[in-house]
Length: 231
Image 1 (cartoon, one colour):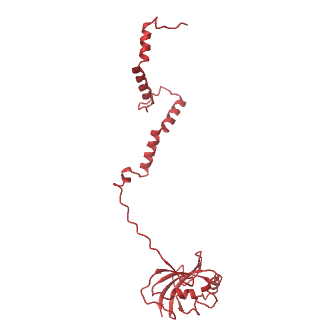
Image 2 (cartoon, rainbow, N blue to C red):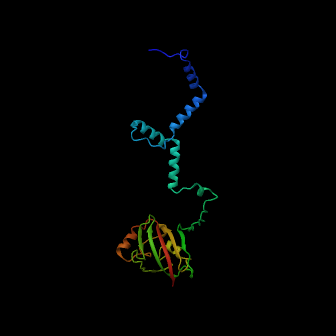
Image 3 (cartoon, one colour):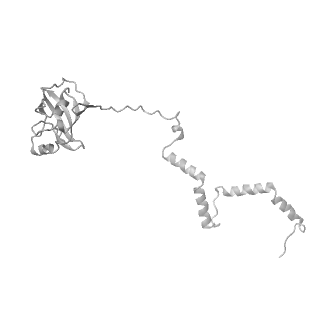
């Protein structure tokens, strides 16, 4: 083997100077950058590329920062996000939200808690009056106990009660006094102003509902009552 020297071939020194020149290096850099760009020309079918090279190039393009930004932009457009609509100047005004009506709870000295659901428009019930009401009685966990309104048919069998704590439970009397006809109240009645004995009304006449009610007399009960008439 033999080596070529620039002194023997003068043209080699010229080629070497050209390869080391800044112009050639810039052209080479530009050419390398061009090779990294996605090609818009398909490779002819008769030129076979190694499979591992194609897979590597595809993986680099999919995980490049540009591809990630493009995927994110396409995803946001698919979800309906538009940068113009998100701008405070172009965004549609939000509809005015009405504050929900707050039902205030009144706590009486006896421990009874009352919520005014519907304020009646008729005459008010006073102590000693005879009133006609519908009611629903539940436990504090929402478990149904008894009601004068059928849960399936909606038919009601109102009861007539005297506003006398010797005949009805004291807590319910406090709820009814002051109510107006057509009004509706919800009340939490503690057991010590509830069914302290089995003779106090209201109490179902049927054996099953009566037994169910009396099995919960030692716990607070929730009554929802509607005043129908003052007799």
